[in-house]
Image (cartoon, rainbow, N blue to C red; front, side, top):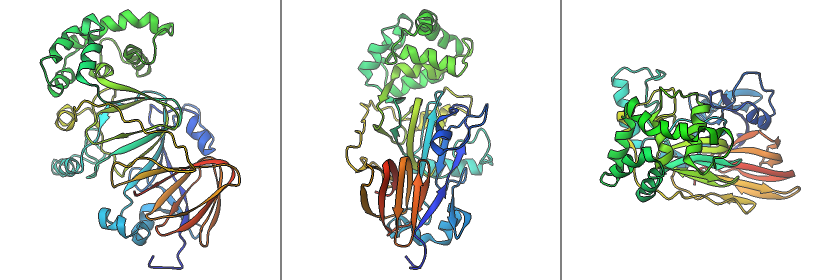
Length: 404
């Protein structure tokens, strides 16, 4: 680093997003905050994104992390600066998904750059509700489940979709259609269907399965359960059906055990349905929505970038070691999980800027000149080329976001 006397580890404070789909208790409990009545707590952000920037404590004063990095870009390291410039390339989040999120996908870097320029030229305000490209970056993301977690992830294999559709009399016409159609055109037709057509497809299932749903007789592996659950959770009326409800029959329904992970590449449609997770992504807020949301749904943009390849979900296994780095898919980030029993310690060296967040227990982090005792929910920003020791005062779990 250019200033050898400069501190290398800083206490980091994130920020909360209160989206309507968030839960009431999980994040306040994790962060040891007092929850407020009638308030939702959806996402805890740690990073520099302008929508909710974190702060670091510098000489006893809070400073925006982005400002600190702008003043001291060497903290990112040469490798990071050469590839991503003088900005932190990743954003770490904790999510509490109490109600289903919108079906969504994210653009490639090139698509984001082009879309961002175009919407700027069109004069669409960056904060406008009909703005699709909030920035010029891609948003690949990975997640690790903190509980049983359910999500939709990519298109099922075509033969499986056809078999699933044929389970219901009202969907057999769709199955026959798919037998002679490619997945992209098939998906486009569904997303552009009118209310009358959606009613023909969905109402027989909704009416036929409603009582079984109420009585708790539908398995969570059954797409019918999620159709009825989503209608209830999102207050979707039978005369205002959402085309996204059909996606429970054509996308992979994935159940992750606590500790398992999955990666969402550009263009892959997905939706989080229920549970808590850690999410790590490129620093971006570009979301193209495909239904199950009151927010702006841009069907032309969706159909332009959706990846309709048939996918077998690649579930990342549970960490089995003290220091476990999950499989890496992009250059922008990787996630390491640290598991230590009481009095265990490990020595680490940061090869890029890092964000460390304690999930459970209490960890002592000792750098060359710093020593912090971090309890559950606390985090630090670690500059590149920092040697530090992690010691567990009690059995502890932490995650570290960094470059591969």
